[in-house]
Length: 393
Picture 1 (tube, rainbow, N blue to C red):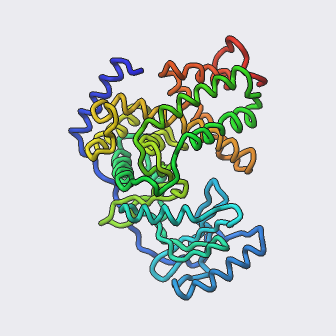
Picture 2: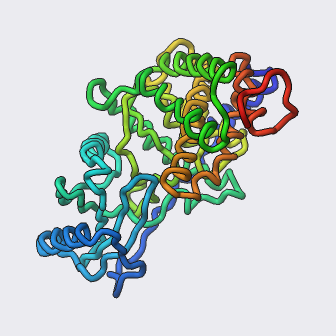
């Protein structure tokens, strides 16, 4: 578990948290100028969908003052959704293009409303053609928290992370049961199965059977048991700098929140683990501890951590965060392999070593996870093979 040296460092961090007051993020304010022409024109592979889009855009443009000639690509994500940007006289808007046979937009609309009711800066739905999968949204800007981060100077980013922590706690305080799907044992198990199904079998070519299957089943049971013991709150499920937008108004320092359609009701530890063990950015542990302790201080003050000894013992809470993070890392390693091997999105699997590092770091700290550590080391050929072999490499 935690050594005396680690506990001493944690106590030092708590002291520093109580005696420092870093600045909050500065709003990104710019004079809006409508685009003269699309900078990244929109391409279509399906002429019928293109015609449907153009018809929908023509119908809604007069009502919302859209400049139809300014439509250009804004971004795409890991799903089948993509986002376009279009201008009005005074602002820009975002268009979601989500083919209804591949994407269900109802959760997006539902969670956006929950976030707005909670006081978060989430996109407002201005128009939605549910049958065709087109949606017009308010634009939260084009600068993500990730783009504003300086990876070379962790302390310089503390204000950004503290604003993210404040927004996260605002979201969690709005929680109530029966509103979002449960992050239950069945969902946790389905997510964990992505690691053997896609990362090990499809990516590494390993036959998951025999001793390896037994090790994974036993480890996954421990992970699910640990994580289900945590108090439940609203969980964004991908709360990280790429999905947080920098404030655009000097008088409103709330960050914009995106990519929330998979939100659930589950462990309070999930989103802070997601924030500090990022899918695309790795921090040294001292910075991770610093921000996590600041979250812990705020969360316990508002009653979010009234569980066992969590509100008094940061070490107990942090162990729970690590176990929750491990579940996410195993899941995401599988998802990134699937995105590359099934969906042809090669860039995602390039980040797999980051997740293997996360998995190994956590597994090395806990006795119950040492079999998982040996399994991963053997598959990744990180150390000499000992004992039995885990299937075909």
